[in-house]
Amino acid sequence: MLMTKERRPAIRTLRGWAISVLQEAGAVRECEEHGWMQDHADPDARQRAVDLACKYPPAGTSTDHAVAAILEVLDSIGDTCPECPASERGPED
Image 1 (cartoon, helix red, strand yellow):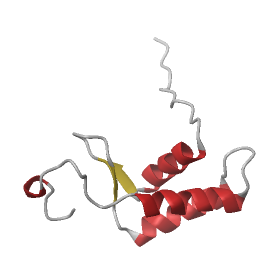
Image 2 (cartoon, helix red, strand yellow):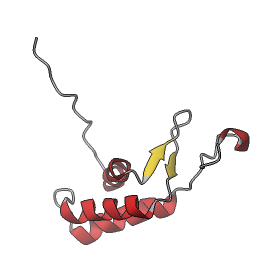
Image 3 (cartoon, helix red, strand yellow):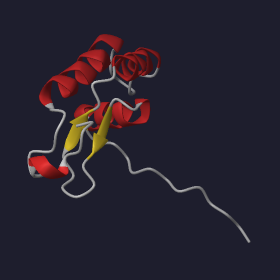
């Protein structure tokens, strides 16, 4: 039986690329119920994301623009889902 690897969808924007890098580095996660991005507030994960952006910027994008996109996404999201009731967020959120 031929096994194929699941393909990731093509990323169409620099912001989308930055979100995927942040997720891969463990710096952000998606609320399972509502889909909002949530910041893990993990400085090591943030640094991993910046390091990935420096080493592997998207084609046609400078390293400076790639890092700026990472930082812009981090600045634009919070650490809780705005739709989840406070009682359901848990102690780590």
